[in-house]
Length: 211
Image 1 (tube, helix red, strand yellow):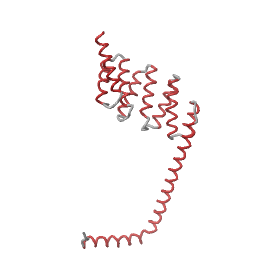
Image 2: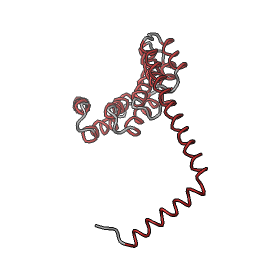
Image 3: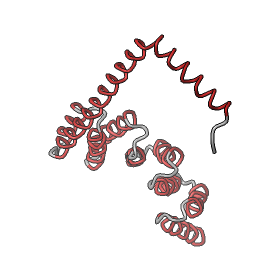
Image 4: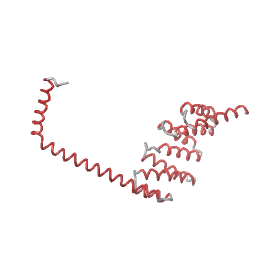
């Protein structure tokens, strides 16, 4: 379909205005182009530098073994994926060694530095496990609940809800535990944890009948 005279006139007017605009502001436009090019070059350099830093951090992380070595990754490469991994590994190692306060510090630092990281639910689960091991059950509940409240799509969400039910049981809150277990199959129909929840429900019913 051919353009109407009105549209053609508008195009010519825009071309004319464009030429006037160029003549009046060409020095500014040229300056902005150079600024834009400089910004693009700087951004590309920064991105490449960051990628290189991440690679170096990962290589450094891969050869570390002790918690002291992992701390070096965190200190020398802050904010990198490798430092995130190092903090999680440290939390797990300290948990295994029953160094509760150090495990809490590692997981807490991870969550402070990487609050939206894909593994943030793992850090929350780790914190919950530490507090549970220490017998601080209210704090454990708080961490487990954050997993499915803040990260409902996480693969750890169903597991965290199951953990909440188990902590309720430890607190003697059988009704809350039962309600929690009952909510899991509906909330996570595809999760393997729904089977564990069903087993816990059966056990609670069995205990109730035998008491």
